[in-house]
Image 1 (spheres, helix red, strand yellow):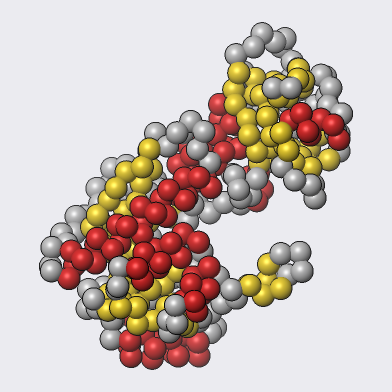
Image 2: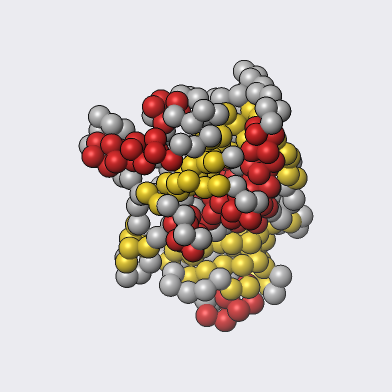
Length: 321
């Protein structure tokens, strides 16, 4: 089996490493161009690029694959490289560029996508975040035959992964990345002997995992405590749930609903402060915050945080405008 691999972040790198260890012939790697990142905003290579360079794999970083778009010259060069690779299949994992129909048509077995949900639930850009935010009991990985739609193609393989009550997007992402790497190797083995059987997605149960907007990070204390707790876990590590306290933006990293007696305080009001956490009144119930972070600082357990930030009962976490 000779493949082209298209991916960019760590999730994709895990799959590429699995394919490499399995002895799959990788004729070409496509990844996003280097991007400025960090405080110095220096150009940084994607995790997939670093892996490709480490293993001496042929690499291309087109800004677009649209032959009629702004970066048509990039796309034309990529088209030549893709066609010359003579691949049996293309494996796609969180690549970040839309694949035009001409790309889907080049490999004889088409393009296989590693998607971090059990389709048709959570099609789209942020399936891991949205599954945790919604309180789903399970997530999973689907290997899908790509078509022109947004994660609408027939499924080839799938494996569920349970979501614990303490799961964050970071921890679930790492579990799913490992499953995805193992599952795509299995899919290619089955494809090589004609044993993959596409199954069309049902129309019932379709949901869309819209891209995370940084504006969503602001906590709405009028929501129930369990909803806020899920959002905090869903936005860990990015973008991080936050709220204003005494005029300062504070990120909240670990919190859980608690059953405590409390007055009918306004949502966002601190009702108790102790070694176990900071208790905040919500629209329904109370949220106990156990890990926080000041701007420019580190994540701290509540006891350490309180040494540098004097939080007292009666103070208010502000509601978003």
